[in-house]
Each structure stands twice: as structure tokens, then as C-alpha cells.
Image 1 (cartoon, rainbow, N blue to C red):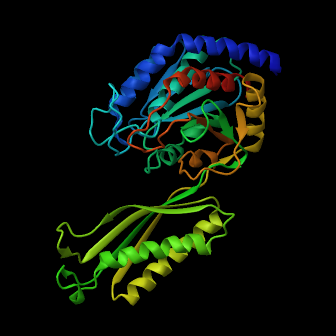
Image 2 (image 1 turned 60 degrees about the vertical axis):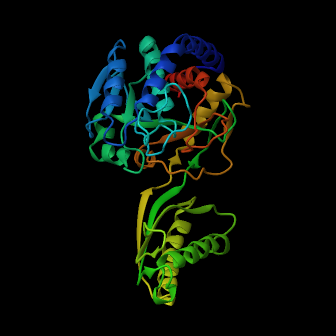
Image 3 (image 1 turned 135 degrees about the horizontal axis):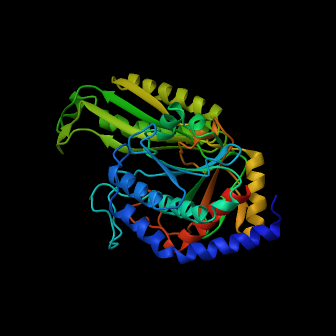
Length: 396
């Protein structure tokens, strides 16, 4: 067992080494950023990851486990005990980037506005540092570059393919960069740290017609406006204020002609809560409200409800160990407990359901939030993120 002095000393050396490879970390991040790919299509991304991992001494590289674009690095397979695994997501999202960066997305409708480019680069940095210090590893370390995190449940597909048993994974770690948290500070806690996340689709159908004769229609779009108001009222008036819940609709479809009242209206949204009981309650109430309002306005209705991800639940003992390392390495001021779960959905939950896991949040203190067209990351945090991960691998 390492004492705090050893953690501080070795951690400092790792940070100096990481700062020495800052140019590589930035180059990797920018290459990933410029050529984003959607989930299950990350072929260029996977090829670059494979090439970098293959250049590292003693690194075994496995391509295509569970999913064609999955890339896994393994270090120290011959060491005793089960493995510690790190996860980084590799997919992008369908959001138009508006940063004017010289390395901005080549594709007008796909981008890394959720930080996966930074996650990949930082984890490659962890792999490079540990490859240089393989002689002090105490157990095998697995580096999982996971496809299809954005709504497609890539983690579940890997778990179902036998990832945990195949690589003897005993514990899992993940670091997510978050702009609304202070720059350079790490946040985590034991128990639930993310939200239950669901996709909701509501359909309304009834007689349409011309905009000049609305009295001859049921106007599903007009009713949709009332429905949205009613659903927000449900959140503010039927949910305990001490329990977090958010229902947001980001997409509405109706007629494509300005003077036509559509026969159908479709609404797509997301429901986030911090406890399962509230999630089930709201699922039931959404269905009741939609059916009731549709019946009152002579419309047919449908509600489709898909639970994307359960809550990520951090292992308390693992978190305790991480806080000890953090306090020795970066001080009490820079590693802090979450006061409440973040209302983000994360398929890392599929890993936390099977092995002791810890999802951490690294604050970037940036102006624009995740999925904003102008989202960016402070690249000078990449060496710190790489050194932090390497320290965890050595001491946790």
C-alpha cells in the first residue's frame, strides 16, 4: 500500500511526463474532433485509436470485441488479480458545430460537442503513461474505447458480449468532462451520480385542413401546445420539490406548409429523474395526461416510452479510495463530493450494475454547456486528466 507521500511524489512525476506529451494529447484530440462519427459508424476513429495503442510498448490491442468499432487495450495481462478498466466513449452526435475552430468538424451536421474527443485523448494519455511504467503496475489495466454511447447503449452490448468475464474486470472507472463545474476540480460521490434517462414520443392524430377553416379540424398542433404546458405543470405540481425531475421536448413535427393544419403532430422529448420511483410515477402520469387531453379534443393519441439508461451508481468503497488518492495528490479543494446527481444520462450505468464502478466529473468551467453548438474544452486540462487516470490505476 502506498502512503500519501508516495502518491504525491509519483503523481507529480506522472504530471510532468503528461505535460511533456501535451502536444500529442492536443493533436489526438483535434484529429478526433475534426472527423466525428456517429455511434456504430466510428471506423476512422477506431483506426486512429488502434494505431496509437499499437505504438505503445507492452500494449495488447483488441479490435472489434462485441462491436466492430470497439477498440480495447490491455496492459499487464500476466499480472496477478483481476483488472481495473477505464472507459472512454468514441461516438459523436448530430449537432451542427459553430465554433470556427481551425479543426472544427468536417461534417456540417455531426460533432463532438459532448467532449468525447477529450475523453479519448485523455485515456490514450493514461495508456501511454502506464505503458512507460508497466513495471510498477499491481494488476492488469484495461482501456475500453466504447462505441455508441449516445442513445444506442454500446455499454450494454459490450456487457452482453461477455466483456467483463473475458477481460477479468473487477472494477471500472470513467471520467466525464463537465462545463458547468469549476475548472480543474473533480467531483464524485458514492451512490447515484446520474439520472434515470428516457426517450418519450407522443403522437396526436385528428382531422386536419386549411388554416382558414380551423373550426373544421381538431388541430393537433394547437392541442400539442396545451399538452406541453400541462406536462410542465405536472413536473412542478406533482413531483416532490426535493426530488429532481426534468421533462424537455426538443423536436416537434407537424405539417410542412405554413397554411395547412396537420392531421398528425409528433413530439419527442427526454425525461430525467434522480430516483426510480419518481421515474415510474411520471411515466404513468404522462400517459394519463396525453390520453385525457386527446379525448377532450377529439384526437387519437399514442405514447411510446423507452428507458435509455438507468442511474449510474458509484461503489462507495471505491469512491472512498479515490478521495484518499485525490486529497494526497491535488488537495481537498480540488476533489469534492457531488451534492446531488447530475441530470445526465450515461450508459456507464450498464457497467456499474455488474462491477464496482466510479464515474467522476472533471470541471472545465466553460461558457457553453454540453451539446451546445459552441461547446469546446480547455485543452490544457488534457495532461492533468491523463496523469489523474494513471495515478488511479497505480494506487486505487
